[in-house]
Image (cartoon, rainbow over all chains, first blue to last red; front, side, top):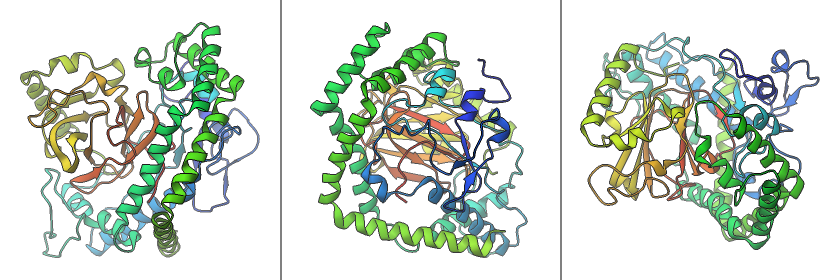
Length: 308
Length: 169
């Protein structure tokens, strides 16, 4: 299969989920149908069978994070509020409606999507669609939108003297959705769990044994890697286009993960580590949770008021 | 979309940046840049001097110590640095000359597009836990959280992509 200039390889496009504005939590989406080669059935917003292997345990820290759908709603609300603000300045420029969100498979544990591995090896999906056609704001409009000139000078007043909010209309939209001071220490605590649990999992004896089994499997296929983070990070794969060898290694990588049950073992160990860390940080995470709920609520209110 | 400067301006900036890099003895770093990163370049300038998009990695917290600026000039395409070990901290200050990989404590980014982002990954090859920066105020500034001293690769995207970085709000 070749990677065309215009489109994605068939397998890869089938593996994409386009979240159409992602406004309804339960909405399923069939936007990929015309590119999906007739694969029946729609897909739900943030569940992608080949992207999140069923044998991977979901991570507890994700309970304290925005889902893909929630992130998308917040981003859309931000655009709507920023556009309302631009209107208040009498500008006719509006940020275009966001293109549909593309959900790629997580590479937390290296690659996990067999279709992408087959078509692209370890390469990321090429950018879909051309974003260049959208209308660009003028420099004066951009200064009000972002609160700074293109040269980076902060801009605090419009040409007619009206004050520009910090960060411009876009920054103002973000502050309004935050609904108050951002709980930065709580966000940092959650982010630390996300990183530290992963780091600790790499040294866990159960995970190390699973790496060894995976490595032995890879050797049978003729490839030598200590663990799946070494294969995904192999600089031999840092090429403009994936090579045949890269695709073969990537397929073996996925197949050995399946054969050894690596993703299940690894994610279960990491989930255990996270559960302990979450208990130790429960008050910070509860504060974070309330902040997120308020933010998502404010986003949905803005969408209800301004979205058409 | 408010992504980039005008094309001619972009070209002019790019030429300037290329010239200044050629003069500043980081030719070695450029020579090791991969084919996949054809429009990626690095320098020791500040975030205010960057092209359409850039990420500045600092050796110390609070945007202190030596830094290196990674420029991305492909308007519509995803591109990145697969493995930051090919680069070093370039500007004067604590950490100058040290490897860029896994040594950055803070970062600033300049991203003009509402839908654009730059992601810093724990592992090379754009894998592991990640920090996704997607803001457009200037100067956009963050502490590295998920990838503090664990920055192995970076990727610029110009379309909204959810690729598994945890979003805590």
